[in-house]
Length: 429
Ligand code: NIG
Ligand code: FE
Image (cartoon, rainbow, N blue to C red; front, side, top):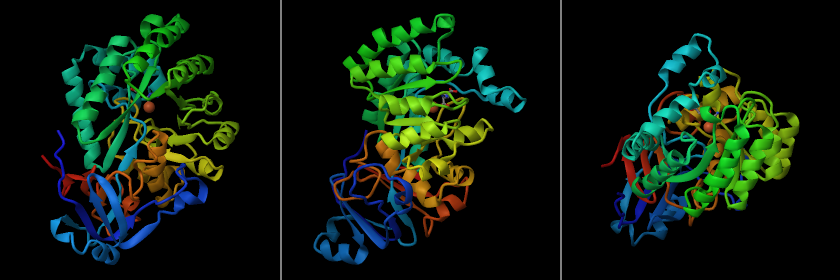
């Protein structure tokens, strides 16, 4: 359980405070993604879990002159202070791992070949069905701790390793419990349409109807998720089936998200624009028309360069999407098959190395735009008065070093809801 912070928290004199302050309350696009609104020698005052002031140290020492004695002070001299990272696309709750498949892929098998022969998502589904709620809770809690150690303070978590109601509910229940127990915030997505179960291989439409008529009503009735996601891909769910699931979810108040155009160009980006999805994710093979439609409708592109890296394919064209006016966010896609990592900073590095994003764009994409991709743009993702005290202190002198020392973890301190949860790179007990 989380401790209560009674004292105000005063983070002082950082080399750089990256605020990402913006009054528009919409995701940042085009050149706005490059404007981090940095304060040099900056400080932040947090009280009752909420940011009360962000300014130069000089200004804040004057403002809080009479109260500094009562505050817990963190000296951030020589460091970078930024919003807690937000991961808007994870498959957090699952059992087991799939390193044998990794070995098969290194020997030439493809991701879809493995899935079509009963491995891949099906393999994790079997393990997740067999796991107890307690086992799933512990495995997922370990991953959450790893996220936190990498400066991530909020994650989205999808179901989709059940493909039957009992297990989908178990995954969503675990996510809900972790949201309550763990310092991190977890935002849930129902993804019953993650794969066609082996038993419905020859009758996929019957499974689609099951999702619509049996699962979605229960997800909504028990308030188990806010979003509804579909793996729209050749050999998985067709655009027509995906549309049925997403529109039915909308009737229950679930906001659409799509795993779109990951392996082949399949009309996923277009479908996202058509159904009013909050985001379309993956997009490695998105068509120019699809990108254009996403820009027009303001659909956020959640890009997952770690998945392309791990599947040894070319990453999505993030540069082209930003230039076309699509708001871009970044995520790990943390899952046991195509992206077994909790390091969002490494993903930010890949975004620069393999998708042409500037360091500034990568930071925007993993903070405020990621927050918007899970409908949390008003509460998190930037350091502004009234937002949650979700903050990372990096042990680097300037933010450009974040992507420069690749594959390293610069996280020194993590503050969640105004409470210190990571200190000197270690979890606080
Ligand atoms: O986003 N592409 C579909 N779903 C996941 C992978 C899930 C798995 O392989 O277990 C993804 O990459
Ligand atoms: Fe995914």
